[in-house]
Length: 113
Image 1 (tube, rainbow, N blue to C red):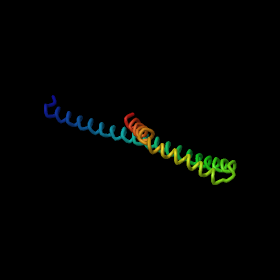
Image 2: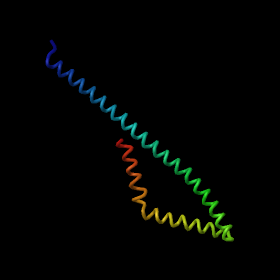
Image 3: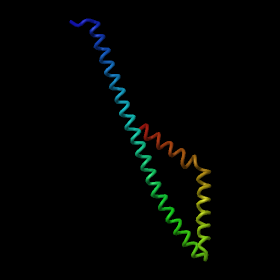
Image 4: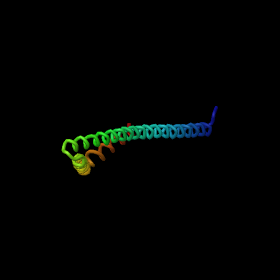
C-alpha cells in the first residue's frame, strides 16, 4: 500500500506535467494567433500595394485625358493632384475614425479570436 508521501510525490509530478502541458498549449495558441494576425496584415498590405499601383496608373491616365480635353496636359495633372490633396486632407482629418480605430479593432479581433 502506497504511503502518503508517495501520493504527494505523484500528485506533485502530475501537477508539474499539467503545468508544462498548459504552458506548451499557451505557446502554441499564441504562435497561432500571431501567425494569423501577421498573415492577415500581409494580405492587406499586398492588396494595398496592388490597389496603389492601379490607382497610380488610372490617375496618370485621367490626368492625361483631362489635360488633353482642356488643351494643356499640365492642367489635368493639377486637377488630379488637387483631388488627391483634398482626399489626403479628409483622410488626415478623419484618420482616427477611418483608419486607426478599424485597424486596431481588426488586430484585436484577430488576437482574441
